[in-house]
Image (cartoon, rainbow, N blue to C red):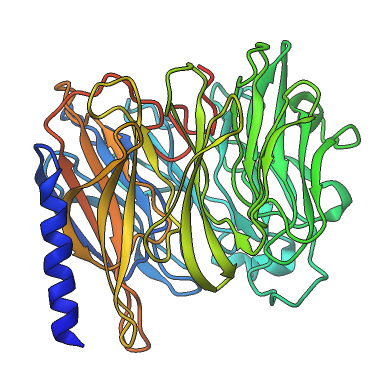
Length: 482
């Protein structure tokens, strides 16, 4: 078996060098005692003119010294690390609330974990629910999901946080009775709750709320339900949320078997100047909804598949309308047989790519025009299983060129797996050339805690068309609106 494994790895590395363009590893750092589900976020924390990287990590229900980490974008050295009692899996948001002209970090995860961290020192500014308050579950505080900035609500001069809290982390798949979830508005300066709004029908949620603007009105889009619980995709005026109300929330669509977990995307795909809603739901259905009427613009059903991969926008043809990409999994969690990469023409709903690729593919993709032909390539971390008896896996960044129907690889083959972290494109030192930053993780065992690798690959090229450079896109909220 080991001989087969070595040969496979050699062939994998040879294939990666055939079509790849100029690139070099800028730096790499190992992070101990941490799975990384969080995606890289970038800001200059040490005032050296180079953007640094912030990530969340850890292991569920196990304290870790590396729950939140900041990495020097120039050297790859750790700037600071912050210990957390459980896993931090959301992606960081930034705002300077200390007045030192350096962004502070806002990030959260499991079991009531949400923190504001001083970006310069790595010290705690505030913690939403501290351990001396007891078990957050008994107080109705569950998991936090990705957050959204909204305008200052408590008149302290700082943008505030719109978040969702829900998802019973102790519930079993067969448990159909779940506690209700909430939307919350939290003061970024103090960490205090400004508003708490229960979801309609007292449903659970794993979905991060996000903002969609149209017709001089701002809406919040949110989802309910779970892996085994039915739910809906909803929208409600932000003004109502800020008044603590949900009575006029509109259900865009409902799923009678499984819920809505993944962030939707928003963009005007039918050219009526109103952003439309594009969604991949747990049961493997991919849909686009008219932002004005909520009617279905197009939809694809994949019976026997599930979707855990937040979709991405890219321009895969020349019609100027953003197209849609995600990955679906055949089977039922946690047992899957294959992973299909699906790209859909945003304007027509026609499937323009459908191919099987990789193993345990749960990380979203980014999309950018790497070869300057005005058509985006799809860039993601492809995992491969080498040895089923030991679950030995490797991974490498894969690039899909839809126009030429060619695939190639960027950077080295690594051991481990990309769990859910999105690779990110960023010009760290503002020299006009881009770097690719990614995080991968070894599989934990009974005797060993997992370790993660964060790597920076210098692409040594400029990129003019950068449609979807990071998780949730250029505005970090699923929207292409400026």
